[in-house]
Picture 1 (cartoon, rainbow, N blue to C red):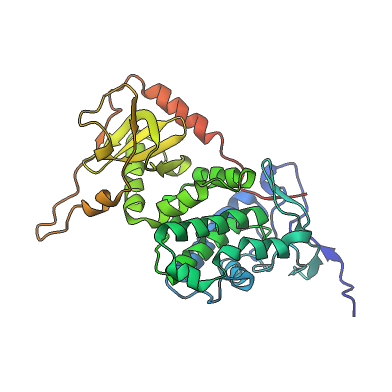
Picture 2: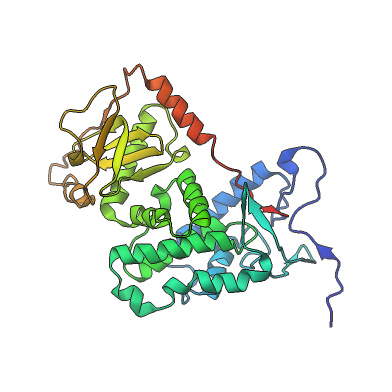
Amino acid sequence: MADERPKGSYTYPNTSDDPDRSNVLKNRWGIETHSELRVKEYRATAVRMQEIAEGDGPKGNFDKAHLKAIHGYIFQDVYEWAGHTRNESPIVEGQRVEPIGSLSKGGTSFLPGSRLEMGLDEALKPIRDPQALRNATAEEFAERAGRVLSELNYVHPFREGNGRAQEAFISELGRHYGHEIDFSVITKPRMIEASIETTNDPSSPVMKHVIEDAMNPGRREAIPSAFEDLREVGEEPLHHHVRTARAGEEITGQILGHDNRVASLVTDQGIVVADRADLPEKLPDEEEITFTARSDFSRVRREQPAQDAQSQPAPARQPQLDHNPELKAIEAQMAAHRSRERDDDDRER
């Protein structure tokens, strides 16, 4: 029998010209402003994501059903339609909503809803063979995981919450095959830019580099040093594109801070963290420096300060910009980088 209920919507009706009340997703709390919903949503989903990280989330075969189950688990306290892809017609507040054909964010349009099932099948191909994943080197695993993350971002299967579901899915994949993947060291601007670049150029290695930074112990432990340096100059680290240097890469930038393990630099492409051994012994106080990165960051991991009986503290970092007359220019560069961030919300068209 046909469902004769009136067609519903994912969002509350617009009742004013206030942007905070425009296209707010219907939620279990009945909150009708973006600002209040954002806070409660992130708090609720953070608890569920931590439960997944502790092994209490849904199990599966890293297929479409598993991805949907993870989304459903993360957003179960927030949305009735949690776990439903946007080509489906879930019930929201007693009414069946129409499938979403077109979805976009900023200037990026995602896969049409009519092709979503095929898109998911294609996106998950690199992780379909368990034996290949078990035999993969760390680099090969990062390449496969990066391809999946890039493709899932383009497919954008859910009306909201794609990023969190995808990261939880990839983290679970890593744990299953013996790799810790910690996305807390990957900033939002970096993930956005990597997603845009791989959408425009699927052959780009930037998402593989994202996975490597989140998975490789030396790289993963180097990035927080740059976060510390940014805080020293009054900057919020998560507002910046922060990454580690790749071997063979030529880097030009100004030293932001350093210790005997790593140095962070302000470059035209954001904040780059390099192995201190790749830089000259004497670092300039003000001028830019150009060098070629060579390290794979294994030394950084090996030289992590040992926790001996006397609990020796880690070597203090040395901010380079305290008395730097170029600081204002660098701060302006950072501000310009922040301005490139895009709106959180996915837009249904």
